[in-house]
Length: 225
Image (cartoon, rainbow, N blue to C red; front, side, top):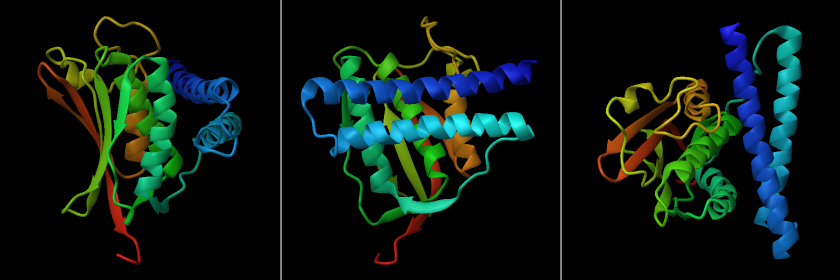
C-alpha cells in the first residue's frame, strides 16, 4: 500500500508540474502577444508532450506493473539548460523572483534519458523558486568537469538548511522548513530521475545564504571538439 501510494504521488506530482508549466506558457502567449512559434510556444508544446508521455507511461504501468523503459541518448547540454531556463523564467516571474542562467559551452554533450533529466532539473528549479527569499536570485548553471563528468547546478537563496535537513530532504513526502504545501516529492523524484540516467544528485548547504543542488552526469564531447 505504501509503495502504491508513493508511485501515485510521483505520477500526480509530475502531472501537476507539466500542467503548471503549460498553463504559465499559455497565459504568457495569451496576454503577452508572443508568437506561438517562439520559445514560449516551444515550452507549451514540450509540456503538453510531457503530459501525454506521463499518461501513456501510467497506462503502461497499470498494464504490465512496470515502469517505462529508459531512453539513453546523447544530446546537447546547452539545449537542455536553455529549455529548462525558458520554462523556469515563466515560473520565476509568477513567484516574483529572478532566474539567472549562466552561459553554457555549446560543444558539450551528455548522455542519459533527456526527459528524465529535464524533469529532475525542473523540479530543482521549482523547489528553488519556492524557498528562495524575496528579492533574491536563483542561478542555473552547467559546466564540463575535468573528471569526464558534467555538472548542472541550481543555487537558491533560502538562507540555508536547518540542522540535519540535508540528510533527509531527498526522502519521499519530506517537506522543507514550515512550508506544508505540495506532497514533498519533488526532490525525491529528481534524485530518482538522475540516478535512473546513471548520475547523482547532491545538495551543498551554504549557511546563511542558501543551497546548491548539483546533478552529476556522464559527459560526452561532440565530434567537432
